[in-house]
Length: 340
Ligand SMILES: NC(=O)c1ccc[n+]([C@@H]2O[C@H](COP(=O)([O-])OP(=O)(O)OC[C@H]3O[C@@H](n4cnc5c(N)ncnc54)[C@H](O)[C@@H]3O)[C@@H](O)[C@H]2O)c1
Image (cartoon, rainbow, N blue to C red):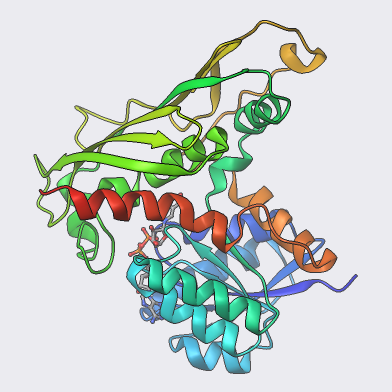
Protein backbone atom coordinates (compact mmCIF):
# COMPACT_ATOMS: atom_id res chain seq x y z
CA UNK A 1 0.00 0.00 0.00
CA UNK A 2 1.27 3.46 -0.90
CA UNK A 3 2.39 5.63 1.99
CA UNK A 4 0.17 8.66 2.52
CA UNK A 5 2.00 11.95 2.05
CA UNK A 6 1.48 14.41 4.90
CA UNK A 7 2.10 18.15 5.01
CA UNK A 8 1.96 20.16 8.24
CA UNK A 9 0.81 23.77 8.67
CA UNK A 10 1.84 25.39 11.96
CA UNK A 11 5.13 24.40 13.57
CA UNK A 12 4.63 25.70 17.12
CA UNK A 13 4.36 24.13 20.55
CA UNK A 14 2.24 21.05 19.68
CA UNK A 15 3.76 20.36 16.26
CA UNK A 16 6.50 18.01 17.53
CA UNK A 17 3.77 15.53 18.49
CA UNK A 18 2.62 15.45 14.86
CA UNK A 19 6.15 14.76 13.65
CA UNK A 20 6.58 12.08 16.33
CA UNK A 21 3.29 10.46 15.20
CA UNK A 22 4.46 10.43 11.57
CA UNK A 23 7.79 8.87 12.54
CA UNK A 24 5.99 6.18 14.53
CA UNK A 25 3.62 5.50 11.63
CA UNK A 26 6.45 5.44 9.12
CA UNK A 27 5.29 2.26 7.40
CA UNK A 28 2.07 3.92 6.32
CA UNK A 29 2.86 7.62 6.15
CA UNK A 30 5.59 10.08 5.25
CA UNK A 31 6.11 13.77 5.86
CA UNK A 32 6.69 15.65 2.61
CA UNK A 33 6.40 19.30 3.69
CA UNK A 34 6.17 21.65 6.65
CA UNK A 35 4.98 25.24 6.75
CA UNK A 36 5.16 28.08 9.22
CA UNK A 37 5.06 31.84 8.82
CA UNK A 38 8.30 31.78 10.79
CA UNK A 39 10.64 29.75 8.59
CA UNK A 40 13.02 28.72 11.39
CA UNK A 41 10.17 26.92 13.18
CA UNK A 42 9.38 24.92 10.05
CA UNK A 43 13.08 24.09 9.63
CA UNK A 44 13.18 22.78 13.21
CA UNK A 45 10.36 20.34 12.46
CA UNK A 46 12.02 19.31 9.19
CA UNK A 47 15.15 18.43 11.19
CA UNK A 48 13.19 16.56 13.85
CA UNK A 49 11.75 14.35 11.11
CA UNK A 50 14.90 13.92 9.02
CA UNK A 51 17.01 13.04 12.06
CA UNK A 52 14.86 9.96 12.52
CA UNK A 53 14.19 9.27 8.87
CA UNK A 54 17.46 9.32 6.94
CA UNK A 55 17.35 9.88 3.17
CA UNK A 56 14.25 12.04 3.30
CA UNK A 57 13.92 15.62 2.19
CA UNK A 58 11.07 17.55 3.75
CA UNK A 59 10.16 20.71 1.83
CA UNK A 60 9.88 23.94 3.82
CA UNK A 61 7.26 26.59 3.07
CA UNK A 62 6.11 29.84 4.59
CA UNK A 63 2.97 30.06 2.44
CA UNK A 64 0.47 27.30 3.20
CA UNK A 65 -1.42 27.75 -0.07
CA UNK A 66 1.75 27.19 -2.05
CA UNK A 67 2.55 24.12 0.04
CA UNK A 68 -0.90 22.58 -0.49
CA UNK A 69 -0.76 23.24 -4.22
CA UNK A 70 2.81 22.17 -4.93
CA UNK A 71 4.00 19.60 -2.37
CA UNK A 72 1.94 16.68 -3.69
CA UNK A 73 0.47 15.98 -0.25
CA UNK A 74 -2.51 13.67 0.34
CA UNK A 75 -3.21 14.86 3.88
CA UNK A 76 -2.78 18.26 5.52
CA UNK A 77 -2.28 18.37 9.29
CA UNK A 78 -3.23 21.71 10.83
CA UNK A 79 -1.64 22.95 14.05
CA UNK A 80 -2.10 26.67 13.68
CA UNK A 81 -3.95 28.97 16.07
CA UNK A 82 -7.50 27.68 16.65
CA UNK A 83 -9.16 30.69 15.03
CA UNK A 84 -7.44 29.84 11.71
CA UNK A 85 -8.35 26.14 11.59
CA UNK A 86 -11.46 26.63 9.47
CA UNK A 87 -9.69 28.80 6.88
CA UNK A 88 -6.76 26.39 6.56
CA UNK A 89 -8.93 23.25 6.56
CA UNK A 90 -11.32 24.57 3.92
CA UNK A 91 -8.44 25.51 1.65
CA UNK A 92 -6.84 22.08 2.02
CA UNK A 93 -10.13 20.25 1.40
CA UNK A 94 -10.96 22.37 -1.65
CA UNK A 95 -7.56 21.54 -3.08
CA UNK A 96 -7.98 17.79 -2.73
CA UNK A 97 -6.40 16.91 0.65
CA UNK A 98 -7.75 15.05 3.63
CA UNK A 99 -7.46 17.10 6.84
CA UNK A 100 -6.32 16.25 10.36
CA UNK A 101 -6.91 19.33 12.48
CA UNK A 102 -5.93 20.19 16.03
CA UNK A 103 -8.57 20.82 18.66
CA UNK A 104 -10.76 22.79 18.85
CA UNK A 105 -11.71 22.11 15.24
CA UNK A 106 -13.01 25.69 14.96
CA UNK A 107 -14.31 28.48 17.14
CA UNK A 108 -17.87 28.62 15.80
CA UNK A 109 -20.53 26.09 14.87
CA UNK A 110 -20.88 27.77 11.46
CA UNK A 111 -17.18 27.23 10.71
CA UNK A 112 -17.26 23.64 11.99
CA UNK A 113 -20.31 22.81 9.87
CA UNK A 114 -18.67 24.34 6.80
CA UNK A 115 -15.64 22.08 7.33
CA UNK A 116 -17.85 19.01 7.72
CA UNK A 117 -19.94 19.85 4.67
CA UNK A 118 -16.93 20.64 2.51
CA UNK A 119 -15.28 17.33 3.41
CA UNK A 120 -18.46 15.52 2.43
CA UNK A 121 -18.78 17.46 -0.82
CA UNK A 122 -15.23 16.75 -1.99
CA UNK A 123 -15.21 13.16 -0.63
CA UNK A 124 -12.29 13.79 1.71
CA UNK A 125 -11.96 12.88 5.37
CA UNK A 126 -11.51 15.10 8.38
CA UNK A 127 -10.36 14.11 11.86
CA UNK A 128 -9.93 16.18 15.01
CA UNK A 129 -7.04 15.81 17.48
CA UNK A 130 -8.90 14.76 20.61
CA UNK A 131 -6.03 12.34 21.08
CA UNK A 132 -6.86 11.42 24.70
CA UNK A 133 -9.63 9.18 23.39
CA UNK A 134 -6.82 6.80 22.46
CA UNK A 135 -5.23 6.64 25.94
CA UNK A 136 -5.26 2.96 26.98
CA UNK A 137 -7.17 3.61 30.26
CA UNK A 138 -9.75 5.64 28.31
CA UNK A 139 -10.08 2.87 25.71
CA UNK A 140 -10.59 0.36 28.52
CA UNK A 141 -13.27 2.57 30.07
CA UNK A 142 -14.97 3.01 26.70
CA UNK A 143 -15.15 -0.78 26.35
CA UNK A 144 -16.90 -1.03 29.72
CA UNK A 145 -19.33 1.71 28.61
CA UNK A 146 -20.06 -0.08 25.32
CA UNK A 147 -20.67 -3.31 27.21
CA UNK A 148 -23.20 -1.49 29.41
CA UNK A 149 -21.41 -2.43 32.60
CA UNK A 150 -22.29 0.76 34.49
CA UNK A 151 -26.02 0.15 34.20
CA UNK A 152 -27.65 3.55 34.47
CA UNK A 153 -25.05 6.33 34.56
CA UNK A 154 -25.87 8.90 37.20
CA UNK A 155 -23.06 11.41 37.02
CA UNK A 156 -19.59 12.09 35.70
CA UNK A 157 -16.91 14.58 36.59
CA UNK A 158 -14.07 16.06 34.56
CA UNK A 159 -11.41 17.87 36.59
CA UNK A 160 -8.61 19.71 34.84
CA UNK A 161 -6.39 21.21 37.50
CA UNK A 162 -3.47 22.58 35.59
CA UNK A 163 -1.44 25.73 35.52
CA UNK A 164 -0.49 27.99 32.65
CA UNK A 165 1.70 30.82 33.85
CA UNK A 166 1.94 34.34 32.46
CA UNK A 167 4.95 33.31 30.37
CA UNK A 168 2.84 30.74 28.51
CA UNK A 169 0.43 33.49 27.44
CA UNK A 170 3.17 36.04 26.71
CA UNK A 171 4.96 33.52 24.46
CA UNK A 172 2.07 33.56 22.00
CA UNK A 173 -0.28 36.53 22.24
CA UNK A 174 -3.15 34.68 20.50
CA UNK A 175 -3.59 32.48 23.59
CA UNK A 176 -6.53 33.42 25.78
CA UNK A 177 -8.05 35.69 23.12
CA UNK A 178 -11.66 35.35 22.07
CA UNK A 179 -10.91 35.56 18.35
CA UNK A 180 -8.15 32.95 18.10
CA UNK A 181 -8.27 30.70 21.16
CA UNK A 182 -10.90 31.00 23.89
CA UNK A 183 -10.08 30.55 27.56
CA UNK A 184 -8.97 27.51 29.50
CA UNK A 185 -12.28 25.71 28.86
CA UNK A 186 -11.74 25.85 25.10
CA UNK A 187 -7.98 25.36 25.06
CA UNK A 188 -7.01 23.00 27.88
CA UNK A 189 -10.30 21.54 29.18
CA UNK A 190 -11.84 20.60 25.84
CA UNK A 191 -10.08 17.21 25.91
CA UNK A 192 -11.68 16.07 29.14
CA UNK A 193 -15.03 17.62 28.23
CA UNK A 194 -14.85 15.56 25.05
CA UNK A 195 -14.12 12.39 27.05
CA UNK A 196 -16.92 13.08 29.51
CA UNK A 197 -19.53 13.62 26.80
CA UNK A 198 -18.22 10.59 24.84
CA UNK A 199 -18.64 8.28 27.84
CA UNK A 200 -22.16 9.54 28.51
CA UNK A 201 -23.36 8.28 25.10
CA UNK A 202 -26.04 10.94 25.17
CA UNK A 203 -26.58 14.48 23.89
CA UNK A 204 -26.24 17.46 26.17
CA UNK A 205 -29.60 19.17 26.56
CA UNK A 206 -28.72 21.93 29.05
CA UNK A 207 -25.53 23.77 29.95
CA UNK A 208 -24.97 25.91 33.05
CA UNK A 209 -21.69 27.77 33.41
CA UNK A 210 -19.68 30.10 35.60
CA UNK A 211 -16.24 31.36 34.68
CA UNK A 212 -13.77 34.12 35.48
CA UNK A 213 -10.36 35.55 34.82
CA UNK A 214 -8.58 35.37 38.15
CA UNK A 215 -4.85 35.38 37.62
CA UNK A 216 -3.73 35.36 34.01
CA UNK A 217 -3.38 38.42 31.78
CA UNK A 218 -5.94 37.20 29.24
CA UNK A 219 -9.22 38.26 27.67
CA UNK A 220 -11.02 34.93 28.33
CA UNK A 221 -11.40 32.72 31.42
CA UNK A 222 -8.59 31.07 33.37
CA UNK A 223 -11.12 29.13 35.49
CA UNK A 224 -14.48 27.71 34.49
CA UNK A 225 -17.14 25.43 35.98
CA UNK A 226 -19.84 23.68 33.96
CA UNK A 227 -22.93 21.74 34.94
CA UNK A 228 -24.31 19.63 32.10
CA UNK A 229 -27.64 17.83 31.83
CA UNK A 230 -27.66 14.95 29.36
CA UNK A 231 -30.68 13.63 27.48
CA UNK A 232 -30.30 10.37 29.43
CA UNK A 233 -30.92 12.35 32.62
CA UNK A 234 -27.31 12.04 33.81
CA UNK A 235 -25.42 15.08 35.08
CA UNK A 236 -21.88 16.08 34.19
CA UNK A 237 -19.67 18.41 36.20
CA UNK A 238 -16.57 20.12 34.82
CA UNK A 239 -13.98 21.97 36.89
CA UNK A 240 -11.29 23.55 34.72
CA UNK A 241 -8.39 25.65 35.89
CA UNK A 242 -5.25 27.19 34.47
CA UNK A 243 -4.42 28.68 37.89
CA UNK A 244 -3.40 25.77 40.11
CA UNK A 245 -0.49 26.58 42.43
CA UNK A 246 2.34 25.81 41.83
CA UNK A 247 2.11 23.39 38.86
CA UNK A 248 -0.12 20.96 36.96
CA UNK A 249 -1.88 18.74 39.50
CA UNK A 250 -4.22 16.35 37.69
CA UNK A 251 -6.60 15.67 34.84
CA UNK A 252 -9.23 13.25 36.08
CA UNK A 253 -12.37 11.72 34.62
CA UNK A 254 -14.80 9.94 36.95
CA UNK A 255 -17.88 7.98 35.91
CA UNK A 256 -20.48 6.84 38.43
CA UNK A 257 -23.16 4.32 37.45
CA UNK A 258 -25.57 2.09 39.36
CA UNK A 259 -23.24 -0.91 38.87
CA UNK A 260 -19.82 0.62 38.41
CA UNK A 261 -17.38 3.34 39.41
CA UNK A 262 -14.31 4.31 37.41
CA UNK A 263 -11.85 7.09 38.12
CA UNK A 264 -9.04 7.78 35.67
CA UNK A 265 -6.49 10.35 36.80
CA UNK A 266 -2.82 11.14 36.59
CA UNK A 267 -1.45 14.22 34.90
CA UNK A 268 -3.46 13.62 31.73
CA UNK A 269 -6.12 10.93 32.29
CA UNK A 270 -3.47 8.24 32.01
CA UNK A 271 -3.81 6.21 35.25
CA UNK A 272 -6.72 4.11 36.48
CA UNK A 273 -7.30 5.09 40.11
CA UNK A 274 -10.57 3.20 40.71
CA UNK A 275 -12.08 0.35 38.67
CA UNK A 276 -15.04 -1.28 40.32
CA UNK A 277 -17.94 -3.14 38.73
CA UNK A 278 -20.68 -5.43 39.96
CA UNK A 279 -19.65 -8.01 37.36
CA UNK A 280 -16.14 -9.24 36.52
CA UNK A 281 -14.53 -9.48 33.08
CA UNK A 282 -11.20 -10.96 32.03
CA UNK A 283 -9.77 -7.58 31.01
CA UNK A 284 -10.47 -5.98 34.41
CA UNK A 285 -7.03 -6.93 35.70
CA UNK A 286 -5.13 -5.87 32.58
CA UNK A 287 -2.91 -2.90 33.26
CA UNK A 288 -3.77 0.04 31.00
CA UNK A 289 -1.83 2.77 32.83
CA UNK A 290 0.62 4.78 30.75
CA UNK A 291 3.51 7.12 31.40
CA UNK A 292 3.18 10.55 29.82
CA UNK A 293 5.97 12.97 29.01
CA UNK A 294 3.61 15.96 28.96
CA UNK A 295 -0.06 16.82 29.31
CA UNK A 296 -0.41 16.09 25.60
CA UNK A 297 -0.02 12.37 26.35
CA UNK A 298 0.82 9.81 23.67
CA UNK A 299 -2.40 9.83 21.69
CA UNK A 300 -1.25 11.54 18.50
CA UNK A 301 0.37 8.33 17.24
CA UNK A 302 -2.78 6.16 17.43
CA UNK A 303 -4.82 9.15 16.23
CA UNK A 304 -2.70 9.27 13.06
CA UNK A 305 -2.96 5.50 12.68
CA UNK A 306 -6.74 5.62 12.97
CA UNK A 307 -6.90 8.41 10.37
CA UNK A 308 -4.59 6.63 7.94
CA UNK A 309 -6.65 3.43 8.30
CA UNK A 310 -9.89 5.34 7.76
CA UNK A 311 -8.55 6.82 4.52
CA UNK A 312 -7.38 3.45 3.20
CA UNK A 313 -10.59 1.68 4.20
CA UNK A 314 -12.83 4.61 3.22
CA UNK A 315 -14.53 4.63 6.62
CA UNK A 316 -15.03 7.37 9.17
CA UNK A 317 -12.20 8.05 11.63
CA UNK A 318 -12.99 7.69 15.35
CA UNK A 319 -13.12 11.47 15.78
CA UNK A 320 -14.70 12.78 12.61
CA UNK A 321 -16.08 16.30 12.22
CA UNK A 322 -19.41 15.63 13.94
CA UNK A 323 -17.63 13.98 16.90
CA UNK A 324 -15.06 16.78 17.05
CA UNK A 325 -17.79 19.39 17.14
CA UNK A 326 -19.50 18.08 20.28
CA UNK A 327 -17.15 19.33 22.98
CA UNK A 328 -16.56 22.58 21.09
CA UNK A 329 -20.32 23.22 21.01
CA UNK A 330 -20.72 22.57 24.76
CA UNK A 331 -18.05 25.19 25.46
CA UNK A 332 -19.50 27.70 22.99
CA UNK A 333 -22.89 27.28 24.68
CA UNK A 334 -21.20 27.91 28.04
CA UNK A 335 -19.58 31.06 26.66
CA UNK A 336 -22.93 32.27 25.40
CA UNK A 337 -24.63 32.05 28.79
CA UNK A 338 -21.83 33.04 31.20
CA UNK A 339 -20.17 36.36 31.75
CA UNK A 340 -16.59 36.90 32.72
N1 LIG B 1 -4.02 18.27 21.03
C1 LIG B 1 -3.38 18.90 22.01
O1 LIG B 1 -3.13 18.35 23.08
C2 LIG B 1 -2.92 20.31 21.80
C3 LIG B 1 -1.94 20.87 22.63
C4 LIG B 1 -1.52 22.17 22.39
C5 LIG B 1 -2.11 22.91 21.37
N2 LIG B 1 -3.09 22.36 20.62
C6 LIG B 1 -3.76 23.13 19.54
O2 LIG B 1 -2.83 23.26 18.48
C7 LIG B 1 -2.96 24.54 17.88
C8 LIG B 1 -1.61 25.25 17.93
O3 LIG B 1 -1.25 25.45 19.26
P1 LIG B 1 0.29 25.74 19.66
O4 LIG B 1 0.31 25.88 21.14
O5 LIG B 1 1.17 24.78 19.00
O6 LIG B 1 0.46 27.20 19.00
P2 LIG B 1 1.79 27.98 18.63
O7 LIG B 1 1.48 29.43 18.69
O8 LIG B 1 2.93 27.47 19.42
O9 LIG B 1 2.00 27.54 17.10
C9 LIG B 1 1.16 27.95 16.06
C10 LIG B 1 2.03 28.12 14.84
O10 LIG B 1 1.23 28.32 13.67
C11 LIG B 1 1.93 29.22 12.82
N3 LIG B 1 1.00 29.81 11.84
C12 LIG B 1 -0.02 30.65 12.04
N4 LIG B 1 -0.61 31.01 10.89
C13 LIG B 1 0.07 30.36 9.91
C14 LIG B 1 -0.07 30.31 8.51
N5 LIG B 1 -0.99 31.03 7.86
N6 LIG B 1 0.80 29.56 7.82
C15 LIG B 1 1.76 28.84 8.45
N7 LIG B 1 1.93 28.84 9.80
C16 LIG B 1 1.09 29.60 10.52
C17 LIG B 1 2.51 30.24 13.78
O11 LIG B 1 3.58 30.97 13.20
C18 LIG B 1 2.95 29.34 14.94
O12 LIG B 1 4.29 28.93 14.82
C19 LIG B 1 -4.07 25.25 18.63
O13 LIG B 1 -5.29 25.06 17.96
C20 LIG B 1 -4.12 24.53 19.97
O14 LIG B 1 -5.40 24.57 20.57
C21 LIG B 1 -3.49 21.07 20.81
